[in-house]
Each structure stands twice: as structure tokens, then as C-alpha cells.
Amino acid sequence: MNPPTLQPSTATRVRRASAAVAMALVLFYVLVDVVLQFLPPHYSVLTDAESDLAVGQFGWAMNLNFLARAVMSGCLVVAVSVTAPASWRRRAGSVLLALAGLCSAALVFFPTDVNRPGEFGMTPRTSVGFVHVVFATSGFLAVLVAMALLTAWIGRTPTVTLFLVVALAGLVSLGLSLALLPQLVGLTERICLLGILGWAFVLCRRLLRR
Image (tube, rainbow, N blue to C red):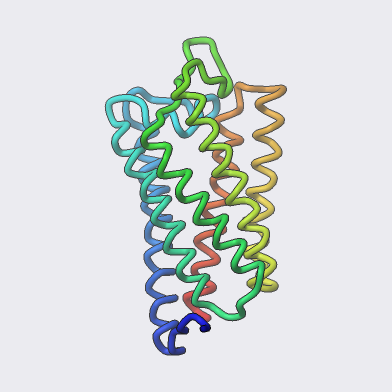
């Protein structure tokens, strides 16, 4: 028996509502990230990973942000799943996007190991910190493959493609900085995040108007 399908009008409402919520959560995520940079303990944008913001007096706000990113990923999955055409790229991309969202939520329960003075990079010192790195890395890789698949699925959209390129460039620069210039790990990670969040926002805008 074939699974039930939504009526076109219902699918349109679901797509638009899910895309709108996802766009709002992207803006919320960016706002929280920016505000936290100005609060104690004043982590560096250049040298400190974004996950460090979840450690300290206002770490609860960053943990809330990790959950918001997970919900945003879920909303985007819903919006994509009710949008034609159906294809293996849409299915695989949706699964990987959902997996990336779960990895983001898991970061709440496994805080990172903040570098000591004079240390740079993302080398964990504890088992909890190691698990954090595993989830963070898995989430990045899953979402980037999902982005590539869904960008191909949605068709020629310059802004969606542009943010995919930014995210990929950020990932490459993050890898290079970890190996060669760990003092710039924070900056390169944020470039990758800029690409990911920007991609999610413009894809949702495309789905909203479709």
C-alpha cells in the first residue's frame, strides 16, 4: 500500500509554515551567537570555537541555540519533504539534514573542552570533549552533504549555490587551520557556519515563494 500523500493545498501550507519557522530560527541563532560574543567570558571570534560559548556563565543560551538549530533542521526537512519533485536526492538530503540536527542537539549534553591559555585548536582533553568533537564533526559533514544533494534537487538557484560554496570553502579552510594555523580555527569555523545558515535561509525563502 502506498503511503498517504498530502493534498496540494495542505502541502503548500505545511511547506510555507515550516519554511517560515526555519527562517525565524536561523535569525534567532545568529542573534544569540552575536550577543554571546559580547558577554563574559568574552571568547575570541578568531581563536575560539563557537562551542566554547556553551561553557561559562551564559552557556545555557548557547545550549538553547544548539537546540534551536536542531529544530530549524527539522522544520527544513518537513518543508523539503512536502515539496515536489520527489527524488533520491530529496530523500537522502532530508535524512542527512535530520541527522545533522540530531548532532546539534547532542552538543547540549556533551560540552566542549575549552582551550587553556596559550592553547589553540580543537583538541579534546576529556572523554566528554571527545564525544563533543565527534558529534560536531559528524554534524558538519552530514549537513554539507545534505546541502550538496538538496542544492542539486532544487535546481538552478544562484543564492543557494553561493552559500553552499561558502560552506564548503569554510570547511576546507577549517581543516587547513586545524593543521597549519590553529589560531584561526574560530574564524574558519564561523565561515562554514555562515554558509550553512545562509544556505538554510535562502533555501527556505525559495520554498516559501514556490
